[in-house]
Length: 375
Length: 197
Image 1 (cartoon, helix red, strand yellow):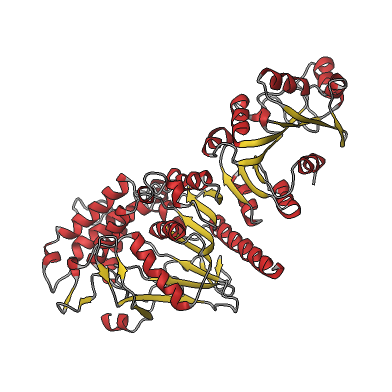
Image 2 (cartoon, rainbow over the protein chains, first blue to last red):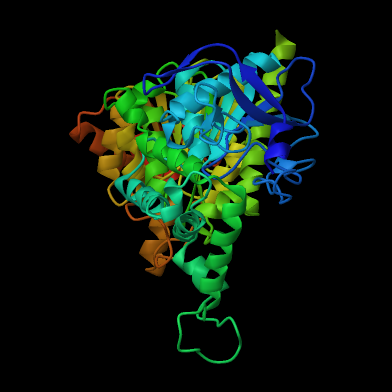
């Protein structure tokens, strides 16, 4: 798998980037993927930001994991983010493990894998690194930035850092500052990894710890109602209870499977670093407690979307973004989509949600094209 | 576009910032945006209507005016529009206070409960009135606080709200309400439209 990762598309960023932690990085790789074609006027580019365990392979089949891209429901020919029409870009975040600069890379100074000597990165660092990619691709202004969960945080950070770099912004199921509950859940995952005895061993991976972290996290992506409907108390083998601690219930074996398959595709240290970046995200604090100042100069048109059954990034947290945008007179629309599938809804086939994105993008695209014609 | 919206859009000057509360499917917003180059925002409680607006490229927030209006800064819009919804709020007085705070000017329209057909139904039949503009039964109407044109004018006086323009619709015809024709209009008009601040 490591050889395959070496062959994926990436740029080496030669500029020096000062991270929020104070360290400077230079000549670091940023892996990315694009879908569709950039048009002549270069005004059809959509930058998608991935979430915690995502990567640059938004749609089609991920060439490394051989699984479907994480946003195959929304991105592709004829889909909501139509690659026949738009040029979709996605980069693997800093700290990630799909070819970008992350803890799995080798430190040229020591010739050893970074592991936990990798610098702590933030959402702002991730976004700044991706700005270099846009420069590399020659895109002055995006049609839209979008993403759910941690991807949504990057949307907010991007529009705040670059108020005139995108016509539209679609933050989905996210928050402007990570809540205590979410920090707590991330800490649970990190502790599961760090207490695995294999974590400290150089030639070993803490698979058990990472799998438990994933199992716990996976529960938070679903909703009580969704779980009940899908699994209820159904037993794995139709017979009766085994009076043991094997996976009697379907939900148990489902979670075990989620954990087991996750360790094949994800690096435990990346998990530590990325969850940390999420915990540190507090856009409000970046502006001394006044979130609306984060968007003071924004020229972008926002469409904020939340899901009714999402308890990880609930509607109320998404609404705080809307309130801040309204307070500074920004152009913002908001809708809460009815779905019983929890936080994961943004990755699933939820027609009302996909329709909203599709039509919002379409109307923005038509508007900018009409304006350009007029000029 | 219905007559009422024609009247409202005529009151609103071009190139102004407008907030449409209870914007529905965005018909008025779209007109103001395209024909009058207004910078428009909407607030609408019904999800499907919000989605309709977003698909038209209109910036609409899903939410309830009784809770959401506090988030908008003072005088942040040139006009705030509230079309035929004042009577449906739990606390119309509170909402109106918010409208006046947010908007430099506010346009409010109300279905007139003093309209003769309404009065007649209650008087003759002794039942709660049902008309074209008040189509629901008493047990399923969203209207909690019905008032007449006269009531609204009295209310503004009491609250020291300045009325800059009073219009009414009588069988799709627009006319002005004056002190002299007030009691007449209060019987024969279906709808009152006021520009206040």
